[in-house]
Length: 164
Image (cartoon, rainbow, N blue to C red; front, side):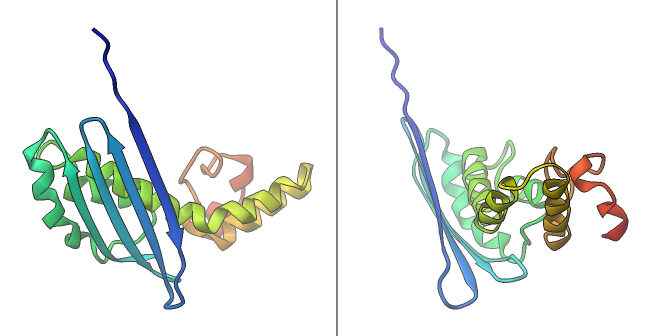
C-alpha cells in the first residue's frame, strides 16, 4: 500500500491605495483545503476583517469556525496575537488548521514590512550591521522579543528594552 499526502500553502500580500494591506492565504492538502483573506489597516496594523472558507476538512468543527472569523476584527498584529487567534478559532473545539492558516497570513504582514530593510542590513558588516539592526528594532518595536534574534538578551537588542 502506498500512502500519498500533499500539502501546499500559498500566501501573498497586496497593498491597495486605501491604507490597508490585503493578505491572501490558501492551504491545499489531501484532506484539508481552506482560504483566508485578511484586511489590515495601516499604519497601526489593526485587523479590520478576516474572511475565509473551508473547502475540505475531515472535522465538522472546522466548518463552524468560518463564522467566528469576524470576531478577530480589532486584533493588532503584534505581541499576543498568536494566543488570541488560537483561542478564538483554534484549540480543541476549533479548527487548528484554520488558525494556522490565519497565522501564516499574519506572518506575511510582518514580512511585508521587514524583508527589504533586513536585506539592506545584511549588506553591512560587523558593528555597522549591529547598529543597523538596533535602529531597525527601534523603528519596529513590535518586533522586540518576537524571535531569538530580537530577544531581550540578544546583542542585536542590547539597550533597546530600556528605550521601549
